[in-house]
Length: 145
Image (cartoon, rainbow, N blue to C red; front, side, top):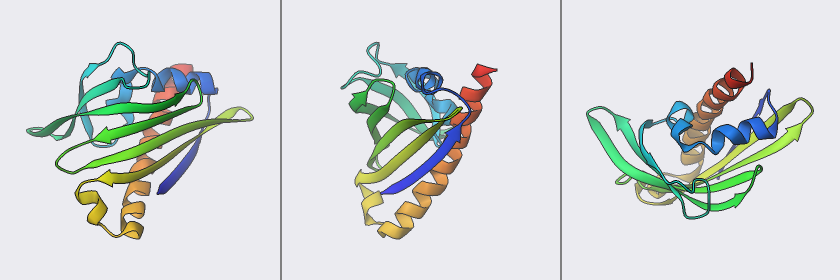
């Protein structure tokens, strides 16, 4: 599994506020092009984000589902983007002084992504998640000014 962490200059509550607003995910999830719908119960277990991935006009409509939640601390998601496949994405928040360390642990669980050698898959996911956490920091820190 690829593990990527970044400190964000905000409280865990401020970070959680962004993570619990499903409409904001295309602002920080690399590859997400648009949000089509968000279940009213997001981020409850079983709720889904209905998103599109890719670049227009080549968009794929799919969903991301909450598998586990620890309110204010952790989300385990099943991210789908077929025909590319699906992945588990575990996002956790840890307070650290005046910041919150956000950690993303991700790996493919089904589809063609599993055919890629694990070291190559981990490196690609890490680079993608470095950018995702950079974007998340921009959103969270921008909202707290």
